[in-house]
Image 1 (cartoon, rainbow, N blue to C red):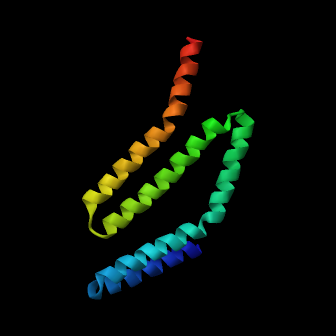
Image 2 (cartoon, one colour; image 1 turned 45 degrees about the horizontal axis):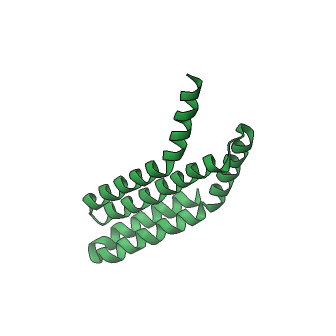
Length: 124
């Protein structure tokens, strides 16, 4: 709830400041976003603990688990970067950031995909 209140307050302030000083408005939005992401660190810790428990339940190895975490990190970072680009009215750059994030996630996930295909191929 506090995060939502901070986001709404920051949005209102950036709208007011944008007319006078667009650069300061952009910087305020970036700083607020970073603060909100850091505030979610506790929730991310709980999510990671749940994912580790899932890893133990299903008996997956760290080699299969680590790429999933990396893909999650890539998705969060690319979304954050793309949204900042959109706030700066750089939609083409935002699209490039999203595409780069998708390609990086696919590259990181490829060993897991290959392992899965090999397992399925072995069953047939």
